[in-house]
Image (cartoon, rainbow, N blue to C red; front, side, top):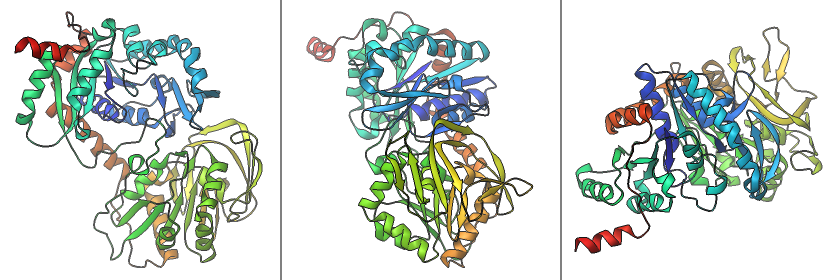
Length: 514
């Protein structure tokens, strides 16, 4: 089955994950699949392949190990007009949007279809996620992720619409009417997402939509707070649309810890700070204002697909000077991946930006050289006397000239990163999800920030919180969707005899009714 959406951010990822968890709880062997994903949030599988973080999250929902087969094509934007193409987990080059859609995309359909076929062969069910909208008629000829995939694999399609945005009925009808007849034959129904209020007030509209399109609404999912999952599609331009700010639970100690994350251009894997936001007494906010960095107990420079560009952006806005002042005062700063690289003395980049040698912020005794081959790894080690795990996705190679390693082996051998005073830098994404290390790190930050009343809660388990979140997604499907109808679609494929909906049909039907 393919879960499509009337728009980006309609809720495809959430619904796909929810269906995966619901099926897994029924004892089925299920896998997620997204043929083509555009995302700056990615993940490294156990065998060293890079895929979208949303597919890794959906694999966790399905209680299976993430694999490159689940996201054969990943596009990582480097500008408004070009992206790095990652094929079956390996970067194969940069390509402009026009170049990709002019023929390259169509040639990938065979690879995509083979990956889906392999997953279908080895699993009881595969829940596919579309991208953007299936009614992007300007891209239909080269489509491999929405109706192009559905038609090639004979997949039933369910379209999700976000009613919280407004216009959901028009979006459902318009999406259907813009599809070719052969594509409409696969569209089996709709799911209303983020509904607030009394469903009884919605029912007349649901009945009218069914009458106009011949397709039922298969679920009305209520709005639920706290269901933010790993961000997935595209290069966002709105900070508030891109990131969420945490509302801290009551602190375990007598004080809170305030963390400011700088939303650098081409920000990637900002989900690294989710584990911090999950801690009671920790408030995480995203800000690009220098005065708010001065007020924070910890400043985080996250990853980015454009280290040199992000560094220039920091300088233009006075943020670089604000970070330097913090370091001079002995106040904590953490850089992750691209953020780590910016904290060093020098960057030599003839790969990503091709800017040559660029001076860094000079806060860590580190020099970075960009390599053509990307480092993809799933390391583990120790930090602050605690076990830690993470994953690496970067072209920059760091030469550490001083300070202390952040992560070491059991024998004390330096593995990654650099700490100099209260400034920390590492290439390891996801390390803060290791509970013991996260608590030890927060205790050190609180001490350096003078927050003597802050204590990390001893019982917080990020993995358990993520599991609870995925179960809540499964509950949404089980309690508010027509699960019998969904099972029939998964088992039997698209229903037969669905009517063709032509543009203008509502007007014609209303005229006939009068």
